[in-house]
Amino acid sequence: MFHPEILAVQEAARDPETRHLDGCPALVLNADYTPLSYYPLSVWPWQTAIKAVFLERVDIVDHYEREVRSARFAMKLPSVIALKSYVKPSEHPAFTRFNLFLRDRFQCQYCGVGKDLTFDHVIPRAQGGRTTWENVATACSPCNLKKGGRTPKQAHMPLHISPIRPTSWQLQDHGKSFPPNYLHQSWRDWLYWDIELLA
Ligand SMILES: [Zn+2]
Image (cartoon, rainbow, N blue to C red; front, side, top):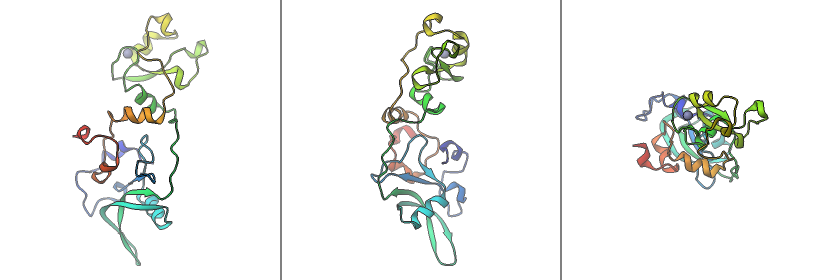
């Protein structure tokens, strides 16, 4: 899968017919026309999208102006596709650095700053703390350093919010405040983020 931020470097302002093929990923919707996944955003490279079209696994919802041709056919590259059969979304998101930061709204859980972020074992590993949703919190480097190998209580550094294992819905809700940098205009109708946030 592409990460939306990688696409941000590509020119996306307009949608010329000469657009580079690598700049034409398709947003993948579930059969209910909601994105298959938000984090990472479900986008497929154009080759995968075309293959799925020919295998009749997806419907084309919208397309780029960019065309691909062979001796026998020409078609505009799909920009939004929807699966024909519904895939049940997983209730719990993957335990990744990005999802952890998103759960904590990209804020240090000790002092609230939003830069120089890393993650902190609430109960330090040296004291038997594990690397799980419930024992890892977003922290800025200075707080992480200050806390060192101590628990929040030992360090007198209370957490703003006790870490929990989030559901996909919770992350999706937090994600409304953090839209990806790159969205093709044909994707916008299908995403959950409010258009105002993108202005
Ligand atoms: Zn901090």
